[in-house]
Image (cartoon, rainbow, N blue to C red):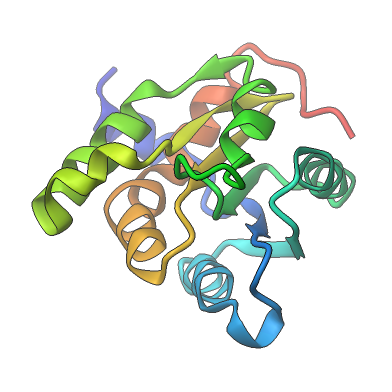
Length: 173
C-alpha cells in the first residue's frame, strides 16, 4: 500500500497541543505558537491546549506531560532549537523520542537552506514518536513554524498518526 492509500486511511482530525519554549515571549509576543494553533484548527484538528514555558528542560517536559494529560495525539514545540547556550529544547525533546522521524529535521533544514542559506545548518529541528504521540520540535521564528507546518507537518500529520496507531496500544495518559 502506498502513501496515497495511507493518507486515505488516516484520521481526519488529530488532537494537537502547542508548546512555545521561550525565555522572552509572553502570550502577546507568541506569534509562532498562535500561528500553529490557528493553522491546526483551520486544518480541522482539535487544539486541546497550549503553553508558553521557559527554555528549560524541566519546564518543557512538564508541558509535555500536560499535553499527554490533555489527550494530545501530536505535540508541536517551537523555540529553543538553536545552538546558543540557552537553547535546550532539543535536549529536552530528543531524549524522550522512542523513534525518530529523521526526515523531518533533514527536510526542514533543506527547505530552510533554500530560504536562508547556510544558517539553516544551525537548526536542531527534530521529530519522532513519544508514548504513542507525534512530537515535532522546530525553531521559534514565525518563518520557521510557517515553513514546518505548511511544507511538512500539516500535509503529513494525519498520515503520521495513522502509522503510529498501527499495531500499537493507545497513547499513555
